[in-house]
Length: 264
Image (cartoon, rainbow, N blue to C red; front, side, top):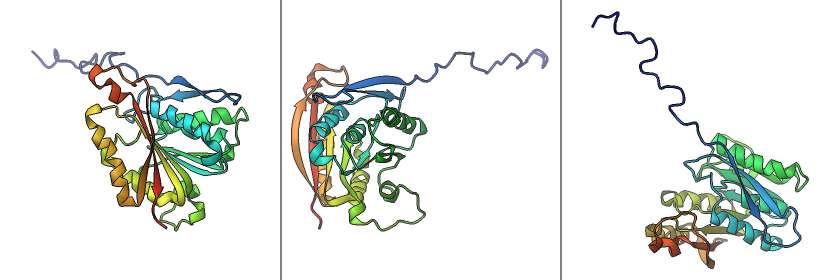
């Protein structure tokens, strides 16, 4: 074969048009509030099409957390400062905004697509007059990093001493403990940003039944960060995924805990 015959014209090594499927488009889910006579009664949520961070689903733990905060808003939300870690859709934080929170800082991994969807969800209700724009902030945040930007809303080159009164009254962790390698970083963030008389609300489902004990290890590890865990309740909801029936009961569980500070 001559050099003339071996031609790369025509895109010999190019993938034909349409060879790779386009990334999934954003989609919508909705959450029905359980309380009577609340406005809005339904919250529409725009979710990313697909995410390795699992932000493309409305999780049972997120919906349970929203139910809980709606029901107990006077005690834990109204006029409080709240931090949401691993927000995904931002639903629990939005419920806080709807219940008169002083400030909700809703965070997730600093992926531009994911953060833009959380921002969209908060902004959509703000535009209807449901709550003021000043009551919420959406940020990208990596667990274990400096919490100063979360507390004060600004980036600094050096860590700033955080006044006790400026810290958060409540920190929300919905379906995060499955990430076993990140337990210490999560707890470090909570320890550094929570008030002495504050609480962390931790809700999760054991999506991988064989790793349930690793999930629960979080509530022992927390003692290394001066927290004491207190179980709120255990309920059963329909599992998020259709898998083997043998593990269905475990995967249907929704655990809820408080982490209570032990430091003074």
